[in-house]
Length: 286
Image (cartoon, rainbow, N blue to C red; front, side, top):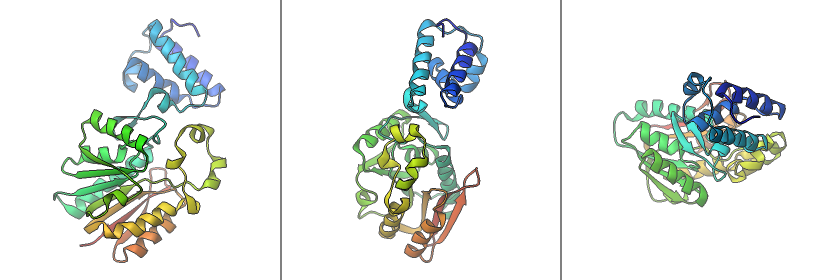
């Protein structure tokens, strides 16, 4: 591709190039937004603008990097989540749209269960901090603690909290261990839940770049839900709310873990926007 091109020409080249390599053409627009420092509508408004030589060079380099197999979000170092921009790198999973539904579902239930009182929330396995930070910024009265087993993930999460001006108490440790001796009104988690034998059906882009410790779990992907169900009774206030993201085939098993641990609670499996079972909520009565 010649370097001096208008935005629409560069996008047309990139879309064709990516499709030819087996990637989605939408990445071309994501990279262009990044290079121009604008939004989707901003790109649309500047379709006939000339790219500077530096912009054209950067655009081509990022498209070729993505075509080499690296997720586009890691190429540009960011991803949008719940209306905000989060820094991402190979230390953390790329936040998914489905997880936004866990945040929204939690906020809806929280208002119904607790009203306007001061609440304490824990996000277990925070990764990029997307859940914890979104909850804090959407509900500023919350006191939010976030844990992760990965030191490098917590470095990324802290950068996001600082950039987005969210006051989060980050703690290093395995699942609920860093929360021992405290009580929480709300606990959220999007733990690793993919069974190891599912790896063969997964995209090489995900397998080769996203952290396996944040993707895969033993016991057919269920071990961390079982452990959380064992650990959380000691940590929950009454009333209380637990919200979990799950693999779409895991609803019945995960719901059973929490029904066994919280016999008096209302445990529901909720579908995402695509109609797949994607969340389990456990509402604990006073």
